[in-house]
Length: 61
Image (cartoon, rainbow, N blue to C red; front, side, top):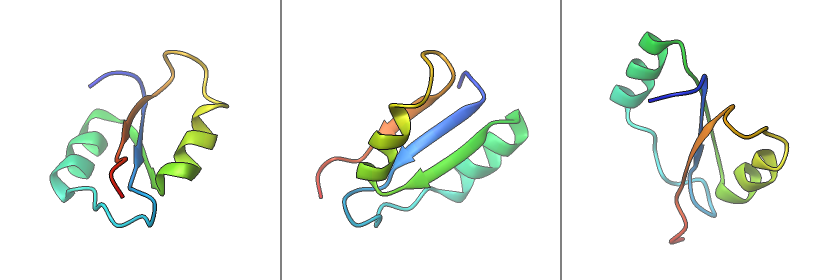
């Protein structure tokens, strides 16, 4: 955990769920979670400055 934003790419069709435990822990730590289809997330990451966010990208579907 680090930064104030966690960006999750949920696959080509947005099917990968973000576990409730992850959302709860992020909330506890004051971290914003953004979850969207991976292509949208990749476009969003182009606008994020280095060190402002962490990303998890699901790339198999």
